[in-house]
Image 1 (tube, rainbow, N blue to C red):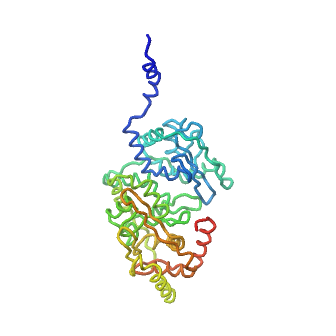
Image 2 (tube, rainbow, N blue to C red):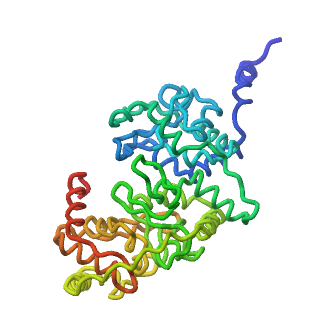
Image 3 (cartoon, rainbow, N blue to C red):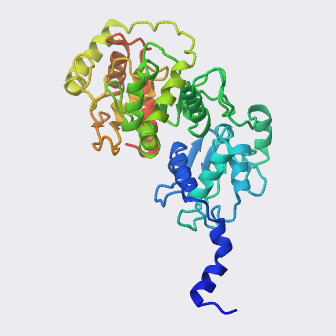
Length: 406
């Protein structure tokens, strides 16, 4: 039997067409890839998206993110659904060797197989980009992947998320996102000396790569836990609310991930976080000495009050209030010091297209003056955080200068 060239072509392509994932699965995968913020880590500074090459700084050296486009040589084009599932669930590469936990498999292990397959289906639709991954630069013996096997024995257990029948649908959905694909604990949970999350302090704040990710668990009197569900949804959707402005790594999370999530999922995140136990209460911080407080007040009035207000109230949806801000009152003052020294820039989203920004003051204020202002905002208007020493401002100034961030 003879066929026209067009029919013959279609018949020859039949098996490939039959293997093409259905459109609803692809679109679900697109959404889940946004929930997981895959773009942020798997896109290098020069792009293109998902082609990897981003340097991830760790206390043990530098790890470069992988190319997850469907290129067969340098990406995941030769992978199967099973290969991708093992990466998310078991932390294994296609050849069976161990991934480093910079890939957040301690969290993605909770993702269901259905969701894993959907993400893989979406990634298969991306343009294939041939871009080899730079070699990692890790201290021995961590440069040997087999060393991670011992780490896994201590800190990793493959486990799919199981809904709690005693909790609401919203709570379970929020738990699935926060503890799974959203991997919020990768930044907001304190790490031990070997880089493993301290499960005894989930989501209760952590210093990471020069920023402080604040406590987001429970309902403490200040910080994100004190927000209403509506305020949390607004922050995750727009990068701002009446109490805070997303900057630094969190601004990227909002831009690439949370702004694309449904309001129902954002509210579920809030429901789950608010249901967590609060961190153990900390003793009240000692009041700053009168001389430092007076110096900080004068500097604040001269340099900060025009925008943040004399009482630290800020401006609705534009300039964050300094009262009860988790970054201001956090256990580590590094974020507020960074904002004073280096300035801060918010993000833009489809819901809030402007980019709020704060200027840098490193050119104007000495280390002692930066510390005085930071101490003033951390101890005024009901804020109860520790005072800041000039040595902390000096150390951060030098770090930012060395990194070329000034």
